[in-house]
Image (cartoon, rainbow, N blue to C red; front, top):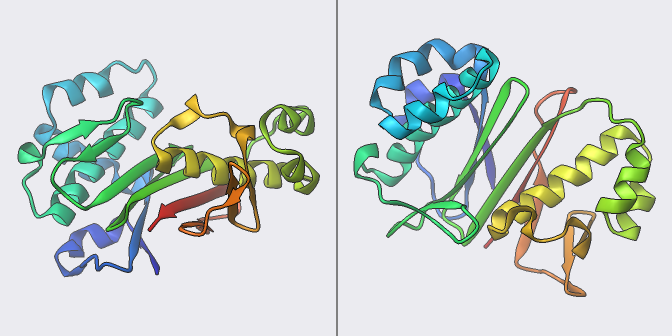
Length: 220
């Protein structure tokens, strides 16, 4: 079961419990959380401060600030561990995870929205994209997607729908774009990889607004 939360729920997080068969997805609008994030910035590490300050444009700094502070707050909550005491490791492709914890998480952001997923699962991946114009998106799809997916893509919205499905799966795998997008197919939210339908995987769309497309991929 997927449960959706927004920024206002962060003030009530102590009443939110993640049970085994649940996935919690947080949809955070940057304009609603910026002031809170500025107050929480002091708890971030020196490296995280540098990661924020390196961006030239304020919009990018705000997006990174909100991403890091909200993740800090929620990761501490779900693991019941002070953020500074968390042992966050990375796999060989750079995907972060908390050592000695069964909590899995993933984060994505686009436009003015940050999306974070948490679960007691083997792996989790999320991806969100703001729908924007791409000239020649059908031709681009032929280079990125499988033949079956290209047939289904008849609109810009569908282009981003398949992009977020596939990116969420790659992020769950932990490979990112080191695995080619056209090396697997997702049709009707079923993943076919290596000519096999992966029964232990689930891909679901997360409804946000007419301007965004988002998906979550889960390996149970």
